[in-house]
Image 1: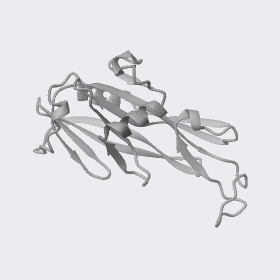
Image 2: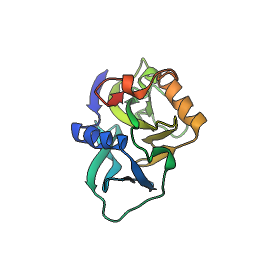
Image 3: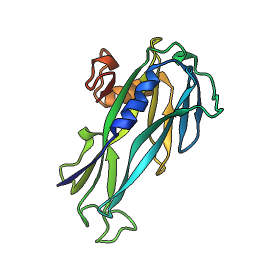
Image 4: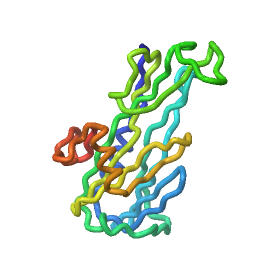
Length: 191
């Protein structure tokens, strides 16, 4: 198995740390999200893409801190007080050997690619790329907001439904009794 890494950069993690502060609002588009902070700054979140050996594209989160240019966004009351926790999640994208998977419309020389969390990685994976495919912001009120790479290439999905956020956390091995501050790498944890 050949392995690559395309994970969040130090600059992205630093920008995401700012989400611990008090929010003014959020603006959500298909390929970009802007979280406006009460201090006048904004965190712009998008995806970076990388081609892996010409077999598949993989995505990671990119976040940048910038001066708010007039975007106010929709208020998000759960996050207005600040002291939020932020946890990044590791994902994987992989390909199976050519001809190893059969599906209608695929030729013998086709390679199939899959994405998921590390626990879903196939034993027969040929090429793997480790990514940062999701993050959760949790408020002191106990509410969470999940940001993850979407099914449509280059898109970002945002989920606020508590049951769906909880299911994601459990699937990723982040137990309900754990909190974001207990994870590694300072105040931006990784799972």
